[in-house]
Each structure stands twice: as C-alpha cells, then as structure tokens.
Length: 216
Image 1 (spheres, rainbow, N blue to C red):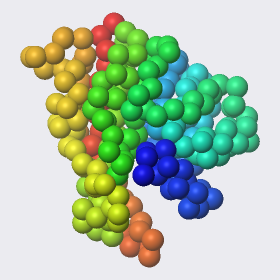
Image 2 (image 1 turned 120 degrees about the horizontal axis):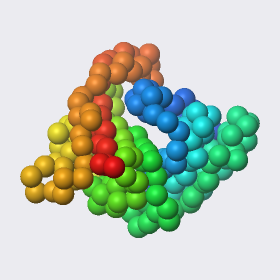
Image 3 (image 1 turned 90 degrees about the horizontal axis):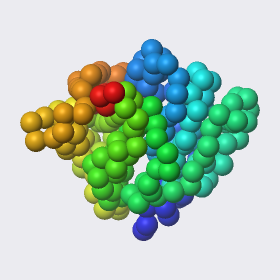
Image 4 (image 1 turned 180 degrees about the vertical axis):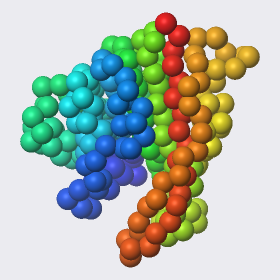
C-alpha cells in the first residue's frame, strides 16, 4: 500500500481522526513568538494550522491525504481564517518548499508506512529563514493499550520508531561539532502528557520535544 492510499484509508475510517485542538507544545512554543510565516508538516485535519492562522501567522499546511485537507479547509472556513492558510496536497517524502518560513512545525510526524523522516526534516529545515525555528514533537513512549507499544501495526510495514529528544537532535545532524554552527538548540527534552484510552483507561506518556533556532 502506498503512503497516499494508507492515509486516505485511515482518514476514511471516521468522520474526524483528530480532536481539532492545537497541540499543546505548539501553543506553548508559538504563543510567545511574533507571527510570521509557518509551515505545518503533515497538517492532517488542520487543527494546528488553524490555531496558527488565528494567532496571526501566514500558514502553509502540507498533507498527503486529500480527504484530510478537505476537512481542514472546511474547518478553516468555519473559523474565519481560510485567507491565512494555503493548503498543499503533497507527499512530504519528495515535496520541496517553494518559500522560506519563520517556523516549521512537525508535530507527531511519524508513520507506520516507511518514511525518510530525518531526510524530510533536514530538507524542510533548509527552508527556515535566519532567526526562524524548527519545532519537532514526537511520541517517545506509547500508552499500554496502543498497538505501537507492542510493536504491532496490524498488517502495516513497521511500527514507527519512538525517539528521545537527544536522538531527534542527533538524527537531524544540524548541531554539534560535525555540523555548521548555524543552529542553536533551545529545547531538547521529554515532556509528560496524560492520555485517555478508548475504554476510558488513563496513562502518562512522554513526548520528545525539540526546538532548534537558526542563527540570524
């Protein structure tokens, strides 16, 4: 199954896959930044893009699923911020940005379908303007009821790797003695998050949070 077919099938399984609420870490980080140009990586049904637009950002949301993008566009229209968002239907494994950004946000950009994730993030980082930031939020641990927690993706190719913040920084290769001194690590940590399962189970999991700033 291709990545596009996988995600179209995934979004067709229900009327809404995600909550529509902004990711808490994105709100925490971007809430203190001056609005500019933002890229929402794998924007899904548009919750993060819409939040950014309502804060004054000019947003490009990129997503492989056309069904998800149609829901995102409808939600943006309903929220009155459609004029601040450009929706792009593309496979991020090959997509190349056509502009520069002050913020590239990749929240839970992980997939059970094979994805050259580090390569994609490095390519997108090249489109960040001087003084701009790359925010990566990823699953570091999974709740006990999750298929990922047991390494089982039920017929898909593989369970996505759940990196630590240090692994994220190392995989990007943008900082450190072997890299150009053009990036500053502002955040690299694991943050706890309380989650509720499908049968009202409760657990605390951890997300890897990385925020890198390109030197001006």
